[in-house]
Image (cartoon, rainbow, N blue to C red; front, top):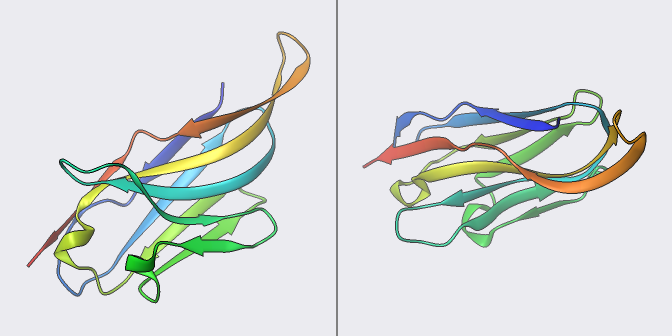
Amino acid sequence: QVQLVESGGDLVQAGGSLRLSCAASGNIASINAMGWYRQAPGKQRELVAAATSGGRTNYADSVKGRFTISRDNAKNTVDLQMNSLKPEDTAVYYCNADITYYSTRTTRYYTDNYWGQGTQVTVSS
């Protein structure tokens, strides 16, 4: 069974920094895109940053220049370094990944999209 587990959420003052981490586990054959989304109260979930296995990255305009996404393909992890945090960055942050895994039950490979459980980031003014 494939899982994504996030860590690193916390309460921080405006202007501060946090680093979120996400680790994928299970019978993983490969991971294509990995990224971070966030959802603030009363708002839709939105893409924050994403990275392909080849190293291409994509950022929301609101976080460009402040956030940096990085992947370790060997460890199946993705981190989000968040600097110069603002109160509007307050949200639950979710890790997301497109994962190809091997099923020992069917002896076949499958590709699915997975979400982590979310980690709370709160930025106080």
